[in-house]
Image (cartoon, rainbow, N blue to C red; front, side, top):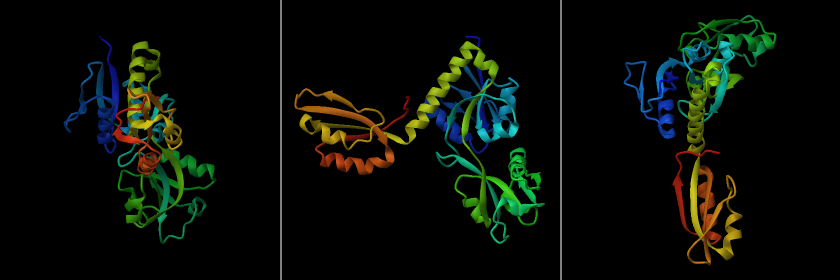
Length: 291
C-alpha cells in the first residue's frame, strides 16, 4: 500500500511510557536514542519523535497525520486540532497531571489574587496569562526554559508548573495554592487525515488498541467454578464490568464464571468468593479491554 500514516511520538519525559503503551497495544517501536525516526513493526506507519509542545502545530499543518501529546499543549497552542481519544497515562503514573500555581512556602501568598504585579515563571505562558486575566490579576508571565522549580523567590515570585505527585515542588520548598488546569495525553489527528478514508481507519485502529491497553492496566480477569445452587451468592459478590459470563460445565451441577474487575478490589473480592462457595478461582492479567 502506498499510503503511510505519519505518526508523531512525544520526545522527552513521555517517550518511554508511550513506547511501552504501544508495546502493550501490539506495536513494537525501536528508538536508538540518536535518531528522531524510530522504527515500528507496521509497514503502514512512519514514526517521528517530536517535542510534545510542538505536536499540535505539526499535526495541524499536516506535516504529521496524527500524534500523541498532552491536551495542555494543544490548549496552549490555540490551534483547532481534533482529539481522537484520551489516553490517561503519564511519566510515573496512570493519572492526569496538573498544572499548578506554586509559591515559596515562606512567601505569605495564599491565592492568585495575592500575586498582583508579581512575576510568574512557566512553560505554559498563554494558558497562564488567560488564567490570571480571568481572575482580573495583573502579573508578568515569563517563559521558563526549564528548572522552573528553582526560580522562586530570586528569579520569580511564583511558578505555574506541571506535577504528578507534587514531590518536586515540596523538595524545593514550594506550596501549591491553586490548580490552573488538568491535563492528560490525547491522540490528535489532522482534519485532512480524518477526511482520508484509509488514514482515518488506521487512526481509529490505533486509538482502539491504545485505549484497550490503557483500560486493561487497572483491570484483571477472574474465572471460577461454582455449584449452580450457589451461583446467585457468587454473582452477588462480583462487581462486574458487564454481566459475568456463565458457562455450563460437563458436570450439570457446576458452572464456570468469567468476569473482569478492578485489580485493586481483587484482594477483597476473592476471599468473599471462596466463602460464597466458589472453587478453582484464577486471577489473570489482561492485555487489552475493548468496550
